[in-house]
Image (cartoon, rainbow, N blue to C red; front, side):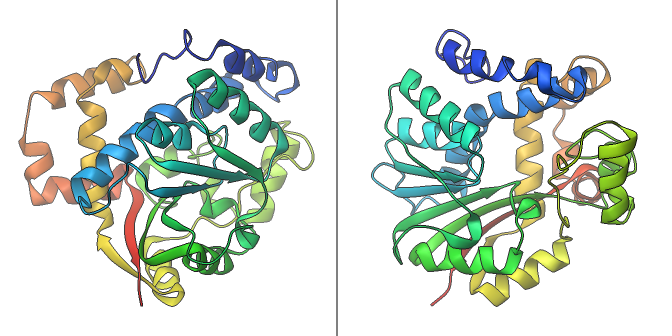
Length: 293
């Protein structure tokens, strides 16, 4: 089964997603939104492979894994297929429903619940791994979220976290959430007004808070009692290289042609200058951190 084309495996789930198109503020932006949810499954397998590479002492079969802000459950489904005991929590009830349908179509059991990252409904030391993938910028209280994650992690448990980089060149050109150039430079009130009023998103639809810088993320992790295991630049370059290795999965046009060209060359990913460039230009903030004592 393809990790990117799952139409033969999850037709009911895809139909539920498509049913949302009519209520969306813009059909082209709906496609971006839809693709993000569909791609969760492939991203879950990528996270599994990345953890096996960088944290080989984490035995995924049998591990207790929680995805906070799990969306439509693509990531915990991938972990369940890898043998983990997977759970997910998500504030939006429609996503929880779609996730349950999706897990049923994949033939795996995933414990999906509706709830908030700041108030995780799990006992202390319940999980070996918590995933927080492009979620921290959406929560109401970032510090409390990380404190809660530490609470539910077992001693020496792992946090896999990803956030956009608000000031990368790519984010300035193409907002990481709504594909609107320059949006991240505006004060948050203006972001809300521009998206909801000017672009017609509708009242109450803008759900992005403050996107933390890498410096801020390091401070938040340290204060919450986490120690970084693998640094952001290494993880970002690894992600980029893996994406470029499959140019057929990259958006057609200039991006795909560039991916095909880069795939044949090693120096763009091994040169220190080029690694710095990729990080500054289009990087995201990736962290693998371990719960401290």
